[in-house]
Length: 441
Image 1 (cartoon, rainbow, N blue to C red):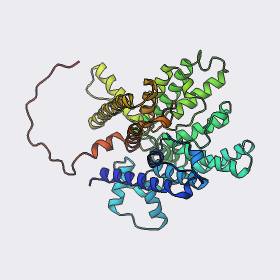
Image 2 (image 1 turned 90 degrees about the horizontal axis):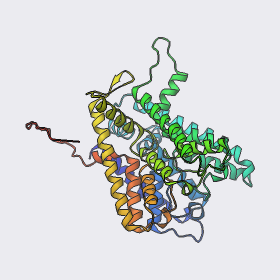
Image 3 (image 1 turned 45 degrees about the vertical axis):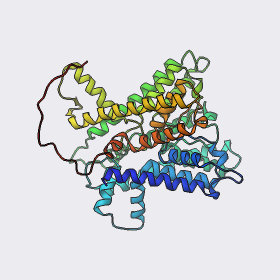
Image 4 (image 1 turned 90 degrees about the vertical axis):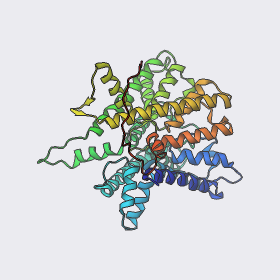
């Protein structure tokens, strides 16, 4: 098996183990029986950190079950290989070459140099952010819950759910009670961005702030520059677009600050988070299509999110711009992009579009729902977002299976899904055939 095939096999194994754990009696509330397909759906949704649920999670699973779900969020968000290496480090076991190669594949890195050190930094950063978020939200939630313990539990759960972009709702109302609480929304956006903007961005930002070297000036990598710019443009631009489109509709009777903050939160949560402060079903169809497009793009590579990823979208836009300008090469931030990266980006866009379009056509035949509900559901599953217009609990057996496949592919990644079909030793073509042009466009 190739490293990519091994990683995918590990994720299959993670879904299997999660399904078994969520089927155990202690994880479910007394008198509650969750059917196998629904348990599999929740397990796949949790491992892929999507957030879609065919059942009411809060009414079905016990406190122990919620803690198990949080563990699955960590497994799916940080990656199977990253967490397995974390336990290797705790047990002080040697990490071999094969393990390092799998870590490199799972974290989308190009070299094995400094892999374990990088992994240790990522884990410390993410766990640190989750702890800080849990303390802030837990203390803030105290007036809203009957006991301090319940408030802190909600703070921990929401922090883990937001950083891992899981979005599984256990209250039945998501963050809707805080529709006018901009402090909670602001903290939630920061936690979503921390998990979705990409681990390399967090690492290089930390080094820029705390590890400055006077002899060698710090320079951000091209990946971090492109990723950060694209993520922020989509976040802010998407929020302003949603606000403008709903200004005379959903936000017609709302104040300017309420419309602005909730639009920004919806743009942030559509990256891959899934929690919501407003009812998505009350939005107009054009706005829902914009949100679907944002979910299709998803989060950044080497993050907890899914979708085609922000850099894929950026490279595709740069490619279109170069074609329009008649250029043979793509330049950005004083660097030229590799043609291989351009080819991969175009392949991901095409494959993802065909996958989502095929899923929409099939669900239109199997489900009793409107077209916009199906489109929204498909892009939410593929982008591992978790937003829904209410279709998820009413999915047929075929519909649940399709959504499970979309969530899995969205988390593993389109490129890895395609590479998993490649043979381990693909023969190189020694003979080049004659070239001939065809009419296009």
